[in-house]
Length: 432
Ligand code: UD1
Image 1: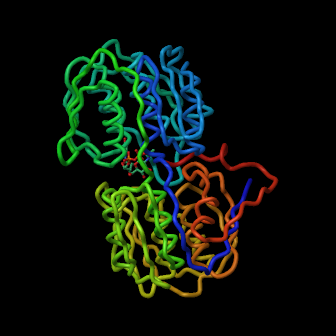
Image 2: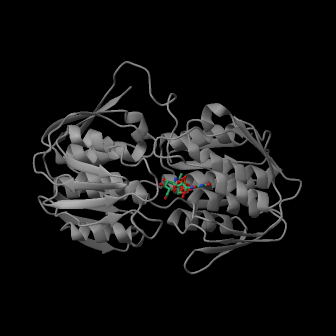
Image 3: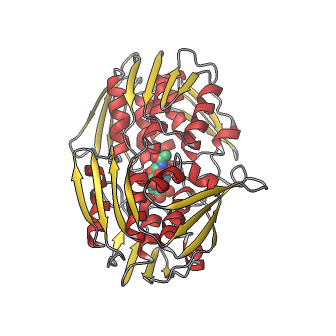
């Protein structure tokens, strides 16, 4: 099990290009299953979740080649509709292959993606929507199977604007009979990317200007296309909060500032001076950030739940008291005990955390238990005096190509240490 060592207490400075988006590439890789041909994806992040999705695609008959940041998926022959538990249990987002396999073959079978450290993560919305499209769902305690001789377009109103459920309905309806209308669809930029990819592959799909209504007219086939994966707004936000916690002056390239609206608004309240150009965001942070009276996570365009922990880590060093409320995933405050080991002053009541900033964060041995919480510990390590040792690097590797490369390029001090011992990864259900 590898660990990450961060030597903090120094400000960041430098410029990097931000990797492609995890949450965009995974559903688009699933969507490639709908194409009876070759899909080429550029700017794919080289992360553990993409490797896991590659294995899942290969297990159902796709030929996949990776060359640099380009991924070629040949889904000409689909040979299986059963997703191996080995990979489904590692990555919850394998659930989006349900819609894709149903759309392509009319069948899918898998074990439930396990419980999850950031919350209950039910899939009731996905299954209800499938049933409304004429898909028969069979469930046992462990397995889930779905079959449809014909998938019928329908009007689907999601009770919650779930990202995964929206993606699954889109994937199931692109090759369906008739028209599907999704109301209260998730509006995240990753949904827009999935829709763009499908349109380029020949899907008939329209999004309302707000993005909350998506209309899909089923077509017979999709065709090969090339698509560039957009930047990862969560990785960008992590590094911005890294600079806010430690101080400094950084520039992130290949970033679309529009997708960081609420994040940049919070950074400005924290005293950060942000300058945006067409494809870059530059931040000049104060030596010590200001506190933020209240931030709550919300669906896009609200403040993203995936950045709540990195923000919390930066606020631990703020001048004053801040309140964060987590409204999406109930277990996203699990990082608090680890931050307290570093001297953070945080009290949690229900889904709210009150953070009293201190200028005396001190490096400690801490444990990452999930992806974004792990990245937040790196942010805290950068803000703390002395050395922070973070166990559970494999969680961070799920979403960050190489956090050492990026942080070192931004002037931080971070190295990896290989240690003996079993990896946590197979033992614990994955998040996101
Ligand atoms: C996706 C993202 C994750 C992000 C989240 C919210 C990927 C791979 N992951 O996760 O990084 O944090 O969106 O922006 O894109 N819910 C139900 N029933 C369902 C589905 C969801 O109750 O059937 C609830 C969830 O428990 C959660 C909320 O809805 O409380 C949002 O979940 P959802 O938007 O579906 O998140 P994911 O797609 O799992």
